[in-house]
Length: 474
Image 1: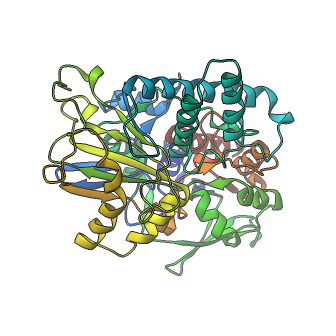
Image 2: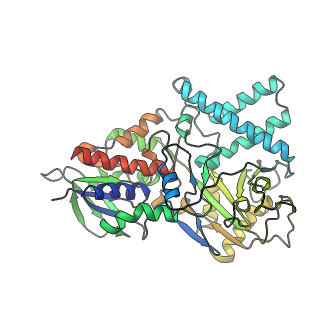
Image 3: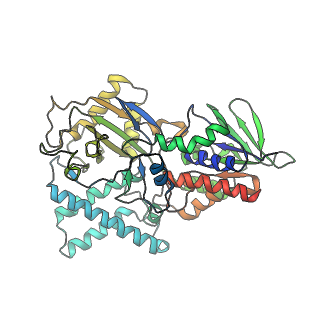
């Protein structure tokens, strides 16, 4: 009789784990709380577009399976040209050359911080943040006559863009464990279309051969409660079934709130789940009648290199009512994408407390009421881009994510590593190791190898790794 494995969660790690096990003649059941597969990789309709509201980046790497899947499925990959608009704290546009120089300096300091963290992690105090490193580097540059006070303000202001990569602010990013974010680079790929074809390919075997139970919640996983030593999975449907192994691929945020569902849970794994932080990254897409922020002479179809790719707003002093916390913002322009994917859309990334504020403000709202809340918050920013006219540039459509309101996403986005953590690397290894003696394993982006944490490829590889561990131990 084929050995039975239950996989909790039909996201990318669960689907990849299932595919490998099925190809090796295992009996696989997948339990998924949602009424769909895909987890945090999914789309929503915006006009005629199916827009990725979860993952939409592919991080570079020689052996990245997602890059291979993109090529196999004819999913386009795009690298942004870093043409940047920058609005200062007073709401004024910064000279374009100064903005691009500041962005280049920011990325150089990120790279230097990564090298420093990798080489000196053991000597860095756990309270030291990535922003502290930026401050010190800028002080050296000013002292050496290589940076003016004005330029320092631009660099430190733009350093806060880090939050849009990990879901929380640069002042909360641990320098000690910054090396665990090594997967993120300035020239990673963006998917101009969406992840649909990639996910369909990954799901092909599981959909055809696994027992898939959508809309079913795992209520508990219990080991060592029968003489055969098998693992019991209890569900919201009142079922309790025994399996040889159980693979838990639920998001880290969900694990944090539901540790007692896993019985027993090794104390070291419990500590690790508490320790690793969970990001709050959200997206707001705004479609306009035309790309008013582009210079009139720019033709993105013939000269993408001249198109504006990014816009950054430093911590604003001009929004005391709508943004009293002075959260900074940034967006990417879909008008800079190659044809036929270019659109008059600005994709804003928010993070941390700003994300929580927005998702709380729009919770339960729809239609005009929802759009009015979003307009009130975002208009002070897009209205400061060049070419804006209130009558001609009124938004056509809005789309805002609500991962922070999503129970099955763990009320957040993906793992990150904040100041105060004692031993983040060992925490990741503890969860990654699982409890194979009890037949309980963990997979997902929070269990990836250090060069894949928080990424789609990391999640994919984690599911594959657990599948082969089960196979090798059988």
